[in-house]
Structure formats: C-alpha cells, structure tokens
View 1 (cartoon, rainbow, N blue to C red):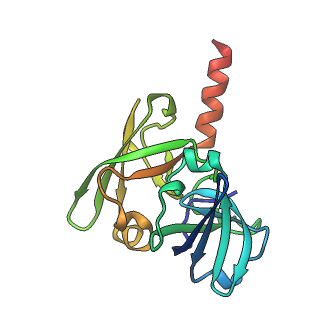
View 2: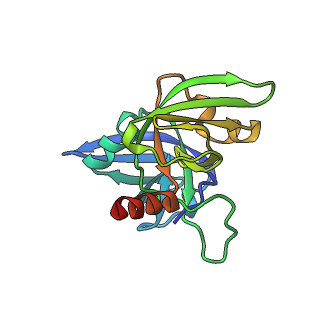
Amino acid sequence: MFTGIIETLGRVERLEREGTNLHITVSSPIGQELKIDQSVAHNGVCLTVVRVDGGQHTVTAIDETLQMTNLGSLRTGDKVNLERCMPANGRFDGHIVQGHVDGPGTVEAITAQDGSWLFAFSHAKGLNFTVEKGSITVNGTSLTAFNASDTGFTVAIIPYTFEHTSFHALRVGDRVNLEFDIIGKYVARMMERRQ
C-alpha cells in the first residue's frame, strides 16, 4: 500500500524488451536503499524490484501493465515519480493508494495561477469515481480533484509538488496514470449490486 506522497524522482536509464515484457532501469537517490522483491510505485504503478546495482534498480512491466498505463511510452532520460510502500509505523500523509492503475487520463489544459498551476485531465466515461474535493492519484501523486465530471477533473499543483514530481515535465496531450479512490470504487460497486 502507498500514500501518494512522492519520495523522489527517478530517471529512466535503460529500457529492455523481453517478449511482451519491458525491463525498466531507473536511477534515483533511493536506489541504493532498495532491495530485490521490494514494491515500488513508478508513476503510481506498483512494480517489483528485480535487480539493484548501485544507485539503479530494475523493474519489469508485463504487457497488460504497459497497455493500461503510460509506462510503455517511457523513453531513456524520462523522469518518473517514485514511492516505496508505506511502513506500518509511518504517517498516512496522502490517501489509500494501491499502486493499481484504473486507467489512463490525458492532460487537457495547464494553466498558470500566479505561483501555482491548474491541470485539467480527461478520462473515459466508465472511469468516473471522482467526487468534488475527493482524492485522486495522478502518476502516483495524491491530489484533490475538483470540477469533477463524468469524463474529467482538475487539480491544483503547488510549487513544491510541481518541482519535486514529474508534473513540471507534463505537457498538454500527455498520457497519465489514474488511480481513483479505493473507498469510492467500493461504494460504486455496492451501489451497482443494489440496483
């Protein structure tokens, strides 16, 4: 389980295809602290560390993960948001994040707001689990959604988040990973069953 509070940015160093799998090697300030079999969220996608070499670690994404997320479009040099799983004795600063992406979103607009930024995102209609002022995870970052609709939402990004996550590298048209609030998904499922 994760919280959506990004620990650090990583840099994609190498991408290797093996059949339908993609091995992603990332360098980061936490690379030397990682261990094989450890779960680490990469742009919000929970992946298992399969190799550690100095300040670099490697994870493997299967075809389904590549189809459902933006990991398949990574290029060498790209930045990725990294978060290790939450320790049992740690503070819960974000919200409940599983690292299981519900689907892609698209950056529709980026608007500077005198020191902060508004990012508007669209998504498929069937992915609508947002509520006004509810939790949403974009590329692994825990945020508050507003202007929520059946096909999109907006978030406000403060300077710290803009600088310390991959938000500063996003452009209109970019694909992002969305994970909706798990509580909202359970409520929606229960309501479906009652109908």
